[in-house]
Amino acid sequence: MEEKRVRTFLPAWWCIRTLARTLKFLLTNGVVEIGRENLPDEGSLVINHNHNTTSEDAGALQAVINRALTILYKKSLESFPFGFFFVMPFLRLAGFIPVQREVKDTVATAKTRWALQHGRWVVAMPQGTSRNPTLSEGKRRGTARLAMEGDYRILPVAIHGADGAIGSGLRRLLLRKGSRKTITILYGKPIPLSALGLSLENDPEGAQATHEIMVRIGAMLPEAMRGYYTEGIAQFLASDAPDVVYYRDTIQPLVKKLS
Picture 1 (cartoon, helix red, strand yellow):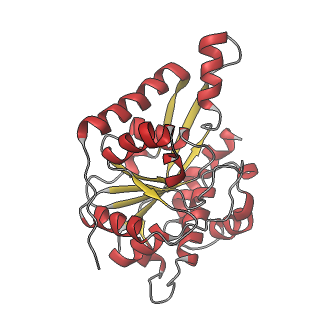
Picture 2: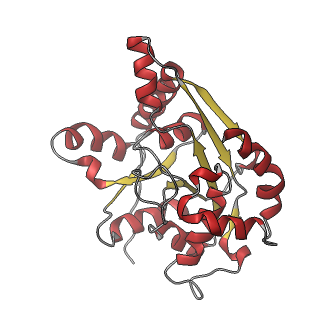
Picture 3: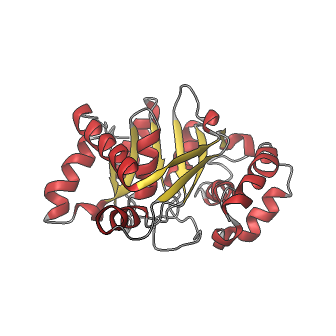
């Protein structure tokens, strides 16, 4: 198994983080974090979140989490000429990993494996597409498989209010029309998939693992945004899963206020 290192050039990461924080300050009403105490102090982590925007949701995480994140992004963002000359250098130098969606990307898998083995926090979106206003099926199962491979913790995250945040902010800033958005980030409970009885032996494709992750993400979103996972979320909240109490008793009253 060939090792693929991920190198982070700190000035590039600092530029991206500074841009994210600047846009948060100029174009939004800020980012509200719920459950931030669930962020672990140390150790490898897979962060999976809903994906309704091209950049605002990942940018919000980049702006508020105080460490270098290894974010997986679609390789098509590097398209020639703009992406090739401006996007690719900064994202790759910042330690982000491009992923080809259409094929099994063994290089991206090897790099993600290396990042987790070296204690990094990897950010990925199982939906793989930002075109749906509600949750669509999580077909990108690579990080779930890697999490089971190394028994790493998964942190489900739900981001609300990020869609259109940059556009709304620009209209407000330049045209004095409309209003800026408030982005809300809800952190779930970090949990190894082994605690749910899942492993590569009984879930080799990561389908059930990805389902479990997505229902936890959806449980932190208003019901109108739960889409494909509406029924699965209801079943999860009525279950005796080891982490369900947090989502059922702490999160549900807060989610109703976001509706």
